[in-house]
Image 1 (cartoon, helix red, strand yellow):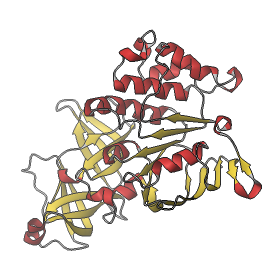
Image 2 (cartoon, rainbow, N blue to C red; image 1 turned 45 degrees about the horizontal axis):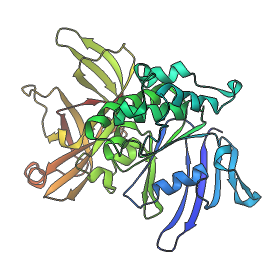
Image 3 (cartoon, one colour; image 1 turned 90 degrees about the vertical axis):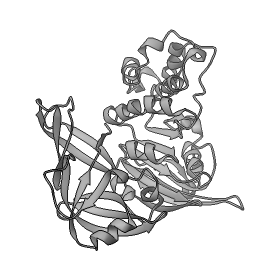
Image 4 (cartoon, rainbow, N blue to C red; image 1 turned 120 degrees about the horizontal axis):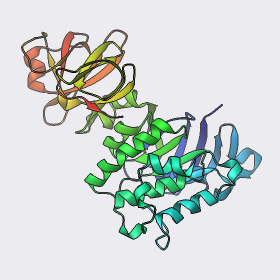
Length: 360
């Protein structure tokens, strides 16, 4: 068994936490929700920084089991913890900060090498520098590297990008995606940013007022019209794709997706390579007939699964590409367009996809 299994109950009077879930032993599980919903409290309970009733086990090893009177102190839990602020030792160089993390683990128990982490996070040129001379995004990359050099069995990340400006966030996200692709350490990732969750998460646990509102794969939760992520301005669908072929003349790449195919600008990827793409609801329109006179390259046969009216006379449409609901896709259209096209549940239509964003 390679899972994180936990259940916590906590009563603070005006706030009550009551959560229980199992997260996979690989990939990124995002705890998502508004401020005050309990995301960070769950993370602190996992770390042993806060005491709640319940249990916490990783890969079958108990860190907390109230039934047995077991509670491991934080220093005895094989975790890496990345906070909102980088919290580096400002009097030490970047190299010495990293060496501090490495020194916490006996050589025989180290599973992640110094050079590997430095390369993955792109901080080789910073090793001799002082943290004070780094940008916020660079400091956070060093903080993540230091946490990884403790060879954790679980990485806890508490809104690691929230203190960064937009440009710094965009700079660091590709490095987090590289960690996801190259390391098999499970990550519990706290965020209130739909964009971060859409780009990084394999699984999403949606919290509200200390309780779990919904949980499931990222694709499933992002496409549920009754949940806040689908109603966000940046609502999107996540699609796993495989590189089919390249058109060198037009600098295009053809991707296979469950139930269909997509064409995107040229990718430097081998045939058969995996790709994860994000399609925002505002970049999808619905038409009744396919047309070869459009400049839009991706016009996919689809079926309407669900429609929901949201603010400003807009309609969220959940579409399915392929049979058996293989690839869910969200579209945001006006109520006027719905009525003019006489759209209805179960109707066969075409989804025009204007933009496809590569995510890893």
